Length: 469
Image (cartoon, rainbow, N blue to C red; front, side, top):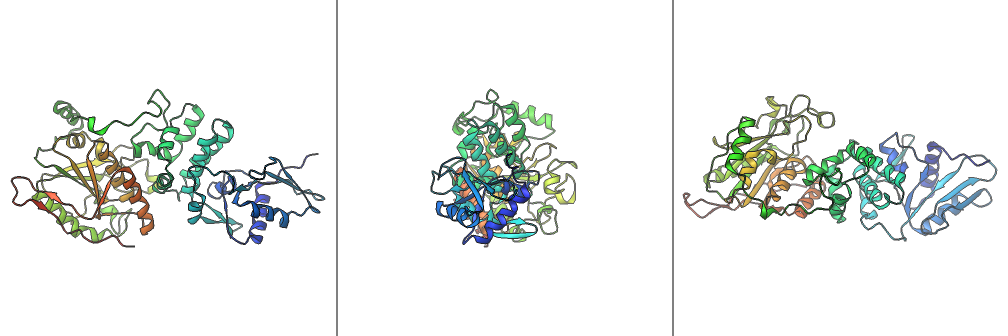
């Protein structure tokens, strides 16, 4: 009679034994790692990333031949799958599948980088310090790359990878920005964009349950849609070929929304001040890092932009009472509430444009460019440079920058006037690297060009306080 495969609890017990003999930490990367974040995940395979010598040493030390029967089901020293059973006792079957580091690596996975922010595996309330698990963001990324690599060869395992991706992306520790930063560092953004337009209905169903469906909004793509809805691998619209929206179209769209068109000026710059609202300050529902120091230099920048005749737009989160993001982020910036109001110290010129974002229940609404007034502004030939400041770096600032790039404008994110939800400089740097990779200029000041009716040739405000570490 064949041995019954071990249950997940016995697999974890084996991990505890392995932890006891290791000389240095190893990365756990399979289903057991996912199970740390998603209790519904069932797996009994022990998948450890290690070199060949370490795998052989583990077998020799923990499973000596006089007590254990060890068979490599794959018969491949670089891709082994050890099936291990006790010779005299019915302990079930141990499945040890070390991912040998000497074998050809995944092109888009840097395991060493993923190991840096890893966490101990938890077993019976105890941290196994030498069994490390990637963060939810990093593990989700590896699952997406694994899915892309084997979806055509092993459909069932590919679907499991996709389900793992969905579950991890909905974990409270998952960060979409960290995920995208990892993908960007590995040069995988194009691969992900092309590989997440699905034909398979089951793939579509699983992917749409993940928070990664928001990649469609961040990239401005039809990710998660079947070919035919948008051509797979199609190139993005060439920004410089985009033309200004006709005034009549703008008037019709604005009339439908009950809004007035933006005023015309001669400015060649657009300053977008993002979400400087009470809920993002100390005492608010979603306070960001160090917002108080933003106000004085930001107000001076806005006044100088006003004197230079720059288009100035203020965006604000303006959510309905039942916005779908509230279970994840908590209630914030509910329209007409005090938390949604602009910070009382914020200087706003009387004729500046206010654009509400996130005012529909079923969209995050990170970017203001769904508003036809913004589309009208950004497509005018007199606007060539867009400066973005405000809150928060990894959400609405990022999305605003990205959308402005699509219109072929020079987009400048001005660091001293931006605040982030992240508390550490390393986390913020990940986002800045992502912005740079998209083509956003990272700047310390705003060299505004004065209009012909304004005395002087340029206005360069004080760069303000530098981001701390």
